[in-house]
Length: 421
Image 1 (spheres, one colour):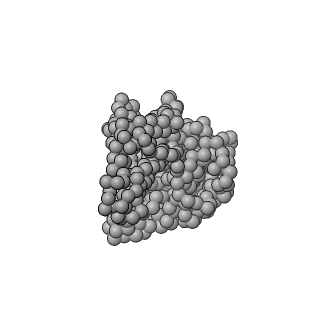
Image 2 (cartoon, rainbow, N blue to C red; image 1 turned 30 degrees about the vertical axis):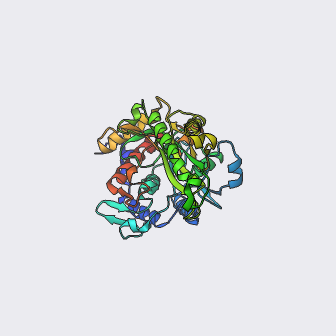
Image 3 (cartoon, helix red, strand yellow; image 1 turned 90 degrees about the vertical axis):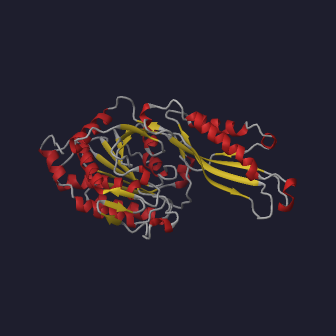
């Protein structure tokens, strides 16, 4: 169900090439753009070439990693990297871009290849109306949706009164360095839609996430005389219990935007390493994980809550030798669209006109680039193809009819927000 308001909108919608967008998505999935790898840069240059071919004014630059790491607000990184590129394409029009469509090119590692049901994660596989592959959901489908909008505008011969910008960024998965660098370069806009997978919802807010490390000390001894030592593994258990208690306390009285999500602010231990010899009592355990930041919470207060919970455990060994908490890696604050901002109503009307369904507004429990754009004064929200439950998983996939719907929604939004003739 599509209800274009005028002939210009109808021309743009008619110019959307569904076969081309599926082809481009498959091409993008084939580029193994894991965060921090050379292929991440390859995909950025691929995007830059396509934007240039679509007659946009394209800015491609190499990120100054050293300077960005020293800048105020640096969001942290987790993956080692030697380079990164920024890519921004802007259409014609007067003034600041009325709309930014933003997507990240990087993906997480594949994990155990045996879990991918016998197919290469970077070889796209289409079964029925579903495209499978690493990055198909998070978020190459969203990236291609943005590109498909620009190409439809050009194919329809439509010109914009106000600029439309497309931001392609790196390093979203490990902190947001690419978005941080793009904003630091001066690229801006009146409003932004980040096409992360939202499953038909409009996501107007997202929680943050902070990477932490906890070091728990023990006392080494021969395994045959373990009673002479203190196992760092054993004394970690009260730490884990304290974390679970804190998690429960922080997930009470939840905002209505998280309706249906019983745990929007999880605290999860992702890795645990202990000991260096099978017949020794381990004298050190290192646990690393991520901690959810509540909406509108200062990340400094988030850190304090974990540090206090861990440092005040009533345990004789831990009182004498308290755990050491540090905060390496990605540091995602929360972010949200300002109350009453017209972008929410605008995109909701476009969804209704393109699909016949009034979208549900919600919030995401994961960190994203949204908080960086919001902090830079660019009101932002998420709306894009895919179900986040398939992200980062060996079953990663995107439903192609949803991709086609999202492109039409964004095309309507671009025409209406930027003005077209």
